[in-house]
Length: 122
Image (cartoon, rainbow, N blue to C red; front, side):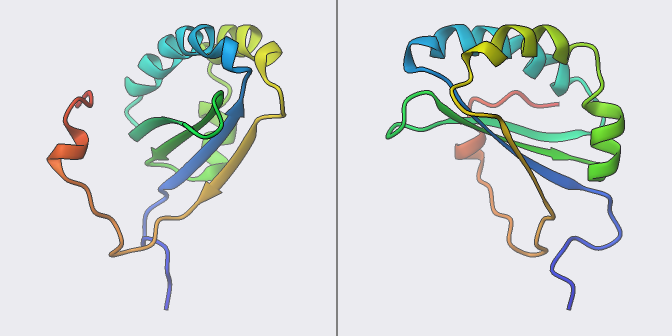
């Protein structure tokens, strides 16, 4: 039995970035333009940003792309709009950025309109 979503090239990317709590506002200011540009990409299905209340400065991004990991690394990650963001934020990182790719497990997704309440929609 295959756990992953069948016959799709979808991939979920989970990114963890840790910055000093003092850098959180500047980090979010630098992230916003990249987040907005990613949201315009036709291959992006979902992008959520989380912040840890128990570890201020620890962020997790959950991104779902309608392509596979190879495509992401070769095409998406090479987009020029990441460069200014990385140049500004990388000096803020207190640990190296972590990027992990996952395949979605069929039949285990649930979301309500209440959760999506203030989300931007395509």
